[in-house]
Amino acid sequence: MNAFDNAKKQLEDALKILNLKGSNDIYEILSHPDKVMEVSVPVKIKGKLKVFNGYRVQHNNARGPYKGGLRFHPQVDLDEVKALAFWMTMKTSVVNIPYGGAKGGIAVNPRELSEEELEKLTRKFVEKIYEIVSHDRDIPAPDVNTNPQIMAWFMDEYSKFHDHYAPGVVTGKPIEVGGSEGREEATGLGGYYLLHEYLHKIDYKKKNPTVAVQGFGNVGATIAQILHEHGFSVVAVSNSRGAIFYEKGLSISPISVKESNIELIKEYKRAKKITNDELLQLKVDILIPAALENQITKSNAKKIKADIILEMANGPTTPEADVILAQKQVTVIPDILANAGGVVVSYYEWVQNETGLYWYRDEIYSRLNRKMKDAFSEVFHAKDRYDTNFRNAAYIVAIKRLAKAIKLRGIIN
Image (cartoon, rainbow, N blue to C red):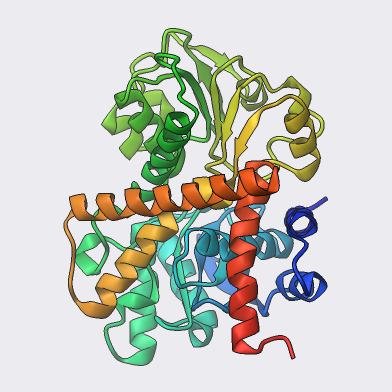
């Protein structure tokens, strides 16, 4: 199953439990994106013209403007982007912010490009899609291999096409050009707030829980550092080149996080080198997949030894793996809830851009903490009410809001 098939299966499973009137209509609406754009992005790379495939998928805007990241990765394809746009619709709904879902991407390895080539690629992509994005229509943001600088280029190029300064067209920008305090660490911090709430809810007593983090990009590195600072023992982390394991616990430093570089961790040379697959199978209390989708599948789910999985990546667990993990009584806190901190603070950034009133970091953190707590409470209640797992419960909360908006707007005749 590809990522979009997985997404539709998750939707179908939740709808069966919810048994909502008009479920078939809701499924049909939500299993098809509103709009799909595929573009060719020609850029000269080292003097030779190369054409890259670019995508923007607008999934659903029943509850507000389309919202979703832009990723640069060699594996980007249309089905992946459709799945990510779908998950964003669910994510914005489950945390109850007035957005829909979208996603974009370019099939490229940005590490093979110079900074000048990367800027050209970004600006050329904006040239291809600027007519379908805006501050009140579709608002991109950073995702895998994109960052505040790329958002600044995107915003600047869009502003040129419209002949006015338009900071609200993207979020995740540098603070100097309309970005928000707290946005860069928001996804990881939101994941920590949610995990803390769950452990408090179940009265978790174990001291210094062990953690393995797959993926040491912005999200994985940030939550690894936060957990380390709060007394968790982060024993393993990884990047695309491999993983390291140190039984005594790694010291995740601010510099290693800023550079997203596991080689800068103090214990790197003393740590055991393992593979990403081996990291997933470590005997730890908490496993955090924070890389790409489809990492935990039916082929390795039986080997998972963690008690709790906190999904900081989008779609890291397939539906077949979910069944196996449930049989093993592994608690999975799903992506549409666990990693929603980024879009929550993106919303706060957008609000600040629209009003011209900017908040301090501690106020952002406080608002984010409350939003994640409220979302967790609703999902936990749905989990109990429907006697199901966290993933289905999160979908149920999201679908109820979406179904009501779709009905009120008369989208289904």
